[in-house]
Image (cartoon, rainbow, N blue to C red; front, side, top):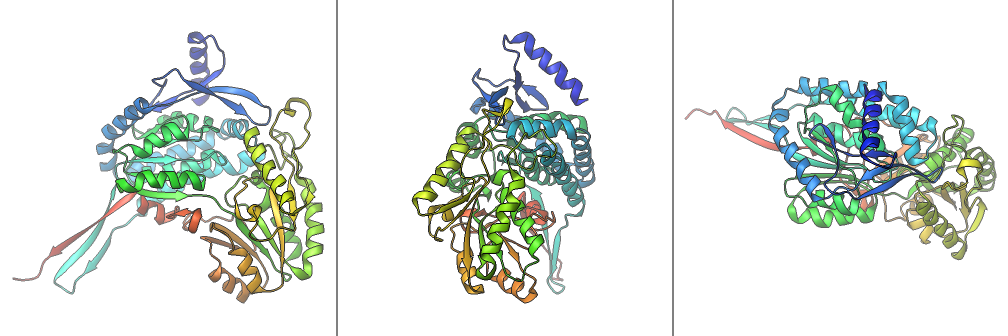
Length: 503
């Protein structure tokens, strides 16, 4: 059982180290192993400022061990039937669900997000990812094309081989498994790296996979810094595909390394998402959902709406009511089940968010609400808490409307017409997601077709069907995840043409 594993593991660590702090190690070839270097870093709980564990700092030697383990496991894993791979993925999903509370507690300790969010969103979605792609594995079909009695073509979809999955800190296990599950379902072996800021649930996943019957070497998890072990993974010639979620600058760096090696790339990057509120919206439903889409996870979700565009005729009323509604999102203890908004991921990130608020003031913006770190009590006095912040008076070309802040900061802009709303919405180098709030069906179709985003939600937000393609345009990324898109990304298409015409 996972609990007894960790109890034994951490007791063992305390005997060999003078420091009683828990240690987060690599998972290679089905075993937890120390890094080849003694170097490590501290994993900080951002809500308290306290160190909760030591994390190994992997290097190229650790990567080589992981690659060799993956290569050794690959022939057997590729040959396994779809049903066999699906059975193991179902087992992993059940293992995650059986450890929901332990995983949720670890997620909240790593990120400072509300425990209720970890319990109801992060961990259940991680299990759902494995269950969804387990089913997809058994339905993934070949195509055939008949050439009028002369020949027949059929398409094989074959595993790429050893692939890399690199995930971010904001939805740690949720997005980690979103990549790993389809890669495993299609017969690949995986080298995976979680963010250095949220390493614990990825560490715990290794034992869950062992308990589920995943063969050693099929999944290997390396801890460490993106600039070190992450970049080494991208560079390694035996790793044939990279699936990455994170910042646009990092995505550009990955592309510059991987493209000359002709590796397959899936890059899910940043967003500066518009939320467009028309006067004919369902007012109360829209109001509550705009607060949710702006400040969930303290605005640290790539899909959050940070540019709120409001039709002029309801602008003043909506602004006033929005600020009143926001007051229920005041930061509080993440472990309190009633808390809606926890801390930011780190003090450094808080400083970045605050620098944008200062920039907004210098650009002529008016801070309508928030605009500073939250004052906390008790064990949270050193935490990275920031007030939900509302800014108006900035033009569409201002930096605060053009650059991703990734925090609890929104800007308000008004518009008079559909055309003006569309122009404001598309005035961004990003193109990940947008939301439309209107009761006009024809307007919803017109706007959805014209918006430059990979996802459009109409009268909803974060309502996800895992069968649908997920990803953005422009600086929001390359490629799509989810459904058949993910299954196709982690396979190579091979056409076979058989001539059966009479001679």
